[in-house]
Amino acid sequence: MSDRLARALLDLAVRRSPADVQDDNRREWDAELYALSAEGRTTQALRFAASLAVARHRNGPLLTGRGVWHAVRLIVVAPVTVIVLLAASLVAMSLAPPTSTGSATSLMAIFVAVAAVLLAALGRVWAAGGPLLRIVAVVVPGFAVSALISSWVGPPADHVPTHAMFFGLFAVVLVLASRLARAGRGVAAWTTGILGALLAASVATVLLLWLSLLGTPLPETVVWSQAALWFPSAYTGLPLGLSEDGAWWVADLTEFDPYLFVGFAGLALGVVLGRLAHPVAATDALPSGGPRGR
Image (cartoon, rainbow, N blue to C red; front, side):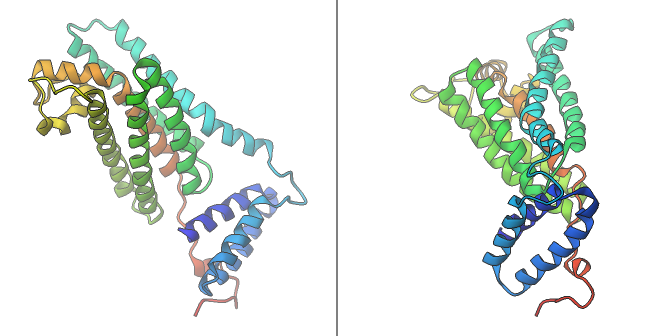
């Protein structure tokens, strides 16, 4: 964990340095960080990386306008874009002529899936920084915005813990997926990310319904053994093994949450996995004659 944090801080320091010396700085700082790590001097390595990350460079300001824009884009513009696209999906569904409530929900599911793909592509373009910084930049604002929206629609005591559960589990998934991506296993990274997002959404949906039912029994048409079907049924509007009454009950309690999960998952996967460079090999980062460990 300390090695990843030191690497993230070093990446930040390189990006803050003047463009014309970034390559030289990376080679020099990578070599020093590798030497400290090889000698087991973890504390010194973290201190070295942190000092570079916060230092004021002679040829540049502490935080450039471009850096501020990248931060604002990920922390503010990106989550707002998710909400705008999901709202556009809702409008598109309302303009279509579905024949039933179930078909309207299914149409909404298609629109949101398309929006998630667009958000993933947008996230790839907006991706900046190391893996750890990217994960924090999408998970924290994503939780704040989605929890706020869902709490406006339903009881905050039910929805806030639900979104905390989703984004907490999804953060773990993103860490695993980013490791696979950095190892050059792109297909496995995206597969892990997508399946992990669906699993996190399913667990969060079960938590939401459990919180909504505190003190009251399940309806006769719904049983706990079908809990794995609640999220896909709520998202698609299809019974998927549930009774018609059970599917309606699940969809009524989950409200807009399944679409928020899918939309933010698409954006996060694009930001975290998009253009994720392979880590610089330690031996390649060393200058000739430099230390190569014990």
